[in-house]
Length: 280
Image (cartoon, rainbow, N blue to C red):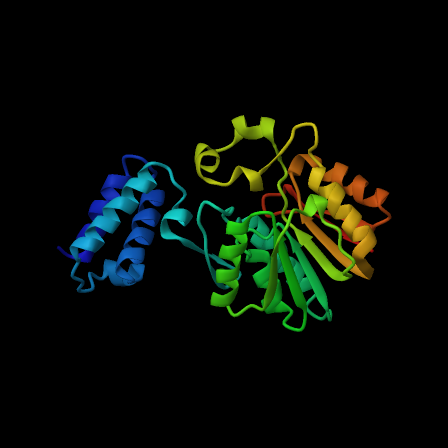
């Protein structure tokens, strides 16, 4: 059977569960994973002989997609600012909103001679890797409470030739004497009572530890990050944190209470409050 015919059959099966554009995209990425051909080669009906193992893999992946597992986990990797990163359910899937503000940070500070950079809650390592590649002169440290996340992030850094020091630790109980020129974080910031508003596949597959904070402590991680910034950012150093759009003013006020300067709320491409930036 031709690869194009299998693509069309796969797409047809997906149409029972997804829109036409989604089915086309998902069929493409599933075939690309199994065959290592790109979409153009698939549609041109490039000669390809499917093994029994490949047919079984495709069918298994198809059923995972139909069960609403995020395609990023099924494929096993994502692109983030030019780096291919492994992802699995032990880490959050990097979002375009995060990619946007990290890209803007790099563009704004490309002439800065950062010596020490800290990424709090690194997950897949996406932010740390992007910064290590953009600022090769800097020593980048990335921390996470999850051993499995640190293991995956380490694999991603090696794959992308990014020199990063990874460490497993709980930032809420962490004390450090190190000084940093730049601190970044995409910490847990979704209140537990917001789960009813979220997509079911996020709740079913992505790690809750990396998503949620107690309803009564929505700024739990920002309080600790503010303390670290106050004590450990060098004079003139920068702090960037991703936020829950509902708490932009609260995070801004919190940071100003820790004597951080030039505190700003930045919006994302959907015009939602997405990042708070401050300077020591």
